[in-house]
Image (cartoon, rainbow, N blue to C red; front, side):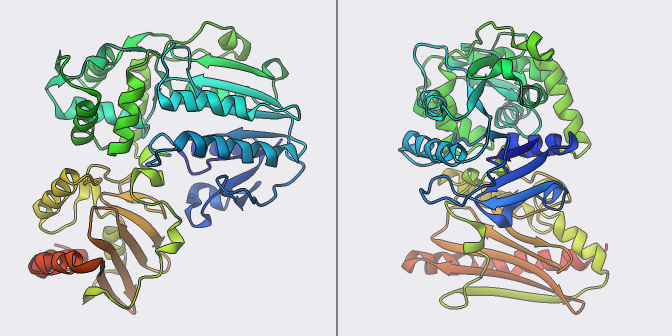
Length: 473
């Protein structure tokens, strides 16, 4: 089948694309930024990419001969106050575009919306579902709750809490009930629902076999990790305080923390249906999902992560608008060293950050990360998705990868920390010489004062870093 995919670089879509390619389908993938196409799929056969921003009314055409489409666009952590309108506009533009094709089925992954008091994001999911309905194609909606898998937002947040806090004083929403589902089961529903006429113009709740409170999820996660954890629930933590609690304890952004707290107050219990037997899917338990996720992590085989999404940082536009480092009105710290072993240095550059650290004065980098968190930034807690592999769009602690070209021996990062200006960090090897360049474009007097305040630290932080990149000791 010829299938249209939206949200190609997202957590679910990236995994789904790989599965559909393995099944022999021909794919047309919609992306907002052609610079962010994942390496795993960019050069595969039977796939093409079309640049489309569904927030804009004038859209590029897609092939008319598509058979089905997946709508996988969500804005859980968007900063926009009017995200409901933005999500509705995306859905309207998508529907109009698909109605001009031969598409017979659209599959939408939504959220479970059975509670009488829905959060704003779940209300938006329901609104999108109604917006996507059309007389020109059949709509199949799968409604899921908490999705558990390596790299998922819920998994990483629970992991942060459990691994960092032996004793937890937590908000009362930890008593809220939910039905988590493994990401592999979500993908099975999305794949097996394709072309199944029994599912046309219907919606189905999909879930794991257990109803758990968030407290039980934390404790079961701890059991899998063989940790002993104690949880005390107090009623005094307001939604605002709960959001700050999540933000400071975990790697989530404050916007996502607010959205999650808003959603976690609502019970997410699935309605019973025959969908499991219809598609012959037997969802695994929560503990099994957690164990399988850690197998992927230990094998360094995390296909996608919520942190890859641009909304986990400061970007509101495309990568290519920042790739050209400005020449004027900037401060520069440029250093160079002769490379002793080019492969060693390149591998070390491509492994920088995350658990590997920044090779010199890591305690200063950590302090800068804590300061960033205090001022509402992303801090260092996002880490990196892979230990030794980078591609454009990847998060790298409080940086975002703009360009990662190992053949051209160049890595370019853009700062997503809170700054009175913009900052870039570049590494490149030219004629057996490593060039390391930090560029800062200040914003006003405060930006200039900031540069001169941190300038003394550059003398040993950046010097130590470039020395470590070439040294094989």
